[in-house]
Length: 138
Image (cartoon, rainbow, N blue to C red):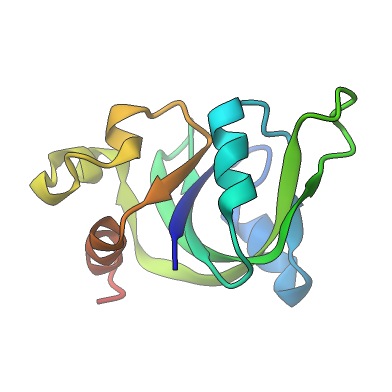
């Protein structure tokens, strides 16, 4: 099962807002990068990802789960882009900052370190375990 990282500006859509949506979740729309679109298309129901606050905070703050696979983003008038639906699973007891991630040798190859602008990113199984450990989820 694949793992992902979803970046959101907390003043636009925060972890608290995602968590407040409950089990019905919300759609993850507005992605307009073709590589990020490919990642959305690859996602399967039940796969999990990290919820990352970009700009303000710059930290992983929670875990989300894909509850609906890729479907057309109605805000995209070109018809080229898609969205998925996500629900909050759990917060990280200790948010993991970008600074911590960059300083952790086991995460040197992480997409977040090497292509920090990409809004939806894959996370390897090893990276998933390290971030969970750093975030207090063991």
